[in-house]
Image 1 (tube, one colour):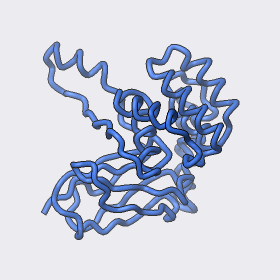
Image 2: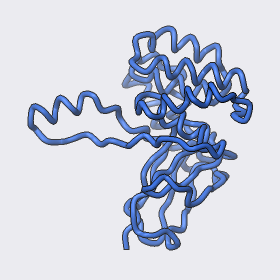
Image 3: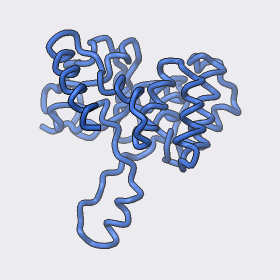
Image 4: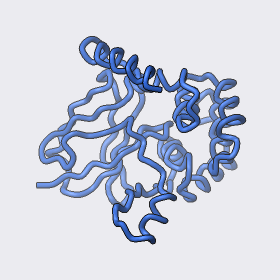
Length: 224
C-alpha cells in the first residue's frame, strides 16, 4: 500500500500542475483493498462498466449491509443506461424506500428522484461524535464516512466558495437545496473539477448539495 501511495503522490502532483484529473479514483480501480470496494463500485457504475461493478458487488461487497440498494441502483442504471426518465413508478417507489432508509445508496436514490422533479426524502448527513463516552463511541461505529469527492472551501462561506469535484462529473447537474429540501439553484458542472461559486445571493443557513444521478453530495454553510 505504501508503494501505491508514493505513486499516487507523484501522479496527483503532476495532475494538479497540469490538467486536473481524479487520480485517486482511478487508482481505486486497481487496488484490491476491500475498504475501497464501495468507492470502486460507484466509479465503475459511473463509467458504465457494469459487469465489473457486478463482480465487485458479488465479491468484496457480498456481505455489505447496503447490498440490496446497490443491486437495485445497478439494475436500474443498466436498464436505462442512465436515462432516469425511463424509470417506472415501481422503480421510483424503490428509490424512495432506499432514500428514506438512509443507508448505502440513499443519497444517489434521492438525487435520481430529484432529477425527475419527484419529491424525495433527503438522507441526513451525520458527523462522527468525537466524545470519549462509551455511548458516543458505539454510535461512531455505525456512521459511514463522508464521501470526500465533493467539498467546498471555505466552508462556512460568506461571499464565495470553491467547489472541488471529480472532473469526470463534468456535464452533470448539481442541485442546491435549502434546509426545507426546496430547490434553490441548479448548476451544470463544467469547470474541470474546480468551480468558484458566488454565495452572496444565498441566505444565511445550511444547504445540501447533490450531484444528480450520483451518490456524491455535501453540505455548505453560509454565514454573514
